[in-house]
Image 1 (cartoon, helix red, strand yellow):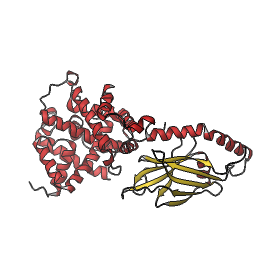
Image 2: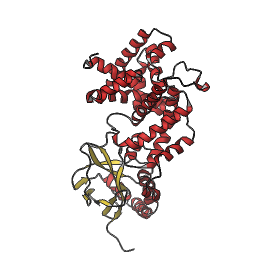
Image 3: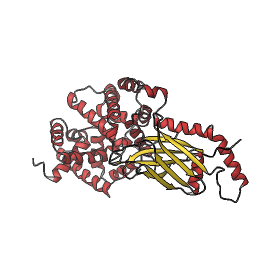
Image 4: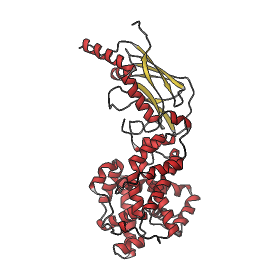
Length: 180
Length: 243
């Protein structure tokens, strides 16, 4: 069986190919589930978010535009929006799953994750590495754990004003680096 | 706040994409986007950029029940798909099947000729080949004929196909070699086309197959098919010879 890109699988989904959705799931579910879990911190909710994401992916695959970005980014966008909807609804009053009580120092990726991430992810990671460590940790906490500026300030800890300016400056630097 | 200020717009779009705009601020920004297509576009750019971080998120394997739940929620697979696997799977498997059966003999013959005709340019025994490219309902859509000697491949449409203005149909050679990637033969325009193949491509095609995929305007940006394969077909010798 030929190795197909995630983009090809997504485009095949748009043509109504159900086996392509299954292959796309096999290729992406563990990363999406890991992401949902670190944001929602509960297995049942993370499963709901991933399930809802794949239903959306199936229904809206036709609106994926390969010129605007990767299939993974397109799917993660759907997933994170779903997670934030769930969090906003529940206002973070959900009990933490004990398995996730031990907060990671830096939720960013390890070297092994980079190999499988693809060219686009590697490029982003290289640009992230150009950002100073504190600011990078803020971006990682916001992206992978879905923390707000206030929550990041509490977690580090650092003054809220400092966190805000770190995040803003590093986003601008990131954009500059990615457009190079 | 002045939402026309370009710096503020860019900052809010980036923070929305990052996920730090939440609760009332997030809903307010979504309302703004719903009335402002350029803001929507700006935000999508940020989202497609930052969400590549997901590709390197720490993976956690979900329970097998999760896919089963997704399948249940999707409902039963539409009837025709019960009878055949998905288009992509079908294409690759049928290519393997052609290689293994119909073209087994042709491949052996070609290999023999190659073996005998050392030092001469490798030319398939027959000079003219034809292919009928069918869609997923097995309706013929394109007919192709190849002059193996000079590599002229002509394509005629037998069923008009329309694609969106921002899309094109791209023709691919599926080489017979195990693991060989499809090679682009160009974007198809209009009801017919004439493509001049290299001798290598022509030789491969005599034992391979043709496929057409749906691609962004101008053809695949990657050099490999990115869109769904819409039509495909194996090529066969047109000059049937007495055994």
